[in-house]
Length: 307
Image (cartoon, rainbow, N blue to C red; front, side, top):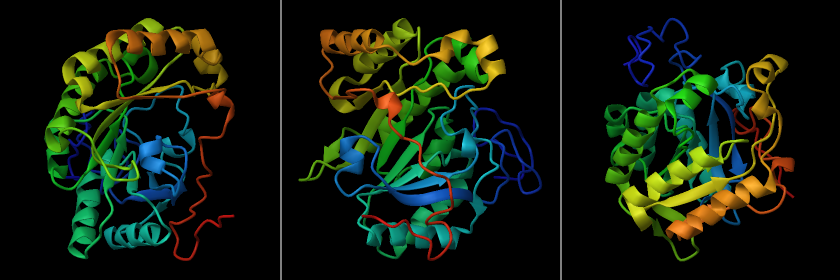
């Protein structure tokens, strides 16, 4: 599947065994960090943390990307399927609530092989697929029965916005189709006795400056379509990290989201009847949600020390 790649909506058809595709990486899995992560939704991180595996590369390339250290494909180390399986078990031994596969879509055949192998070895934690929402349903079908929880973004409602920020005007229609397939696979959300999600879909939306109206359209669509079968995570943590050229083209991205903007979105969700939702409190944009992509947990014996 990597030799003429059609995995994502870009359909670059590049032989990724030889060169990088539209996702900026070749076929060999590249991972920048594998460690307990405390900054996901409470039902994912819990008190012990989520076993987050951060894959290098990205097929979307948003101009305001918060994880640009790895999304461009420069950082990280190439690993085998067998090494990824070992990482799963290492994170389990550290107390992880789940395995959180962060931006894995351009490696789906290899990720599926690793998950299948781990399950055959008796692995017991849920697998979380954490992605941008820019996916193909036919590719997601390869993961049916292997992924327990889907954690996609729904970033843009308008094609013009998607074109402006990531050169993907088809993003809205792709995200709708992808989320529909995710819900088909998992059904409604299921939690354990500690409140940790075991199965289901949580859709994230990162509110951008001057985009409250678009955010309302996304929340309205999700609630109208799926009601309480899914959870919606409304995020206010946008942080300006782009370069001067980006701000020259997109000056609205130079500032953080205001308290008033976020309150408008949350109130809208309440007004239309959304109950299953996560909201953020305080000045979250000032906190560090972005870890160091320093190969912790990727190389054998390099696990992060915890207090």
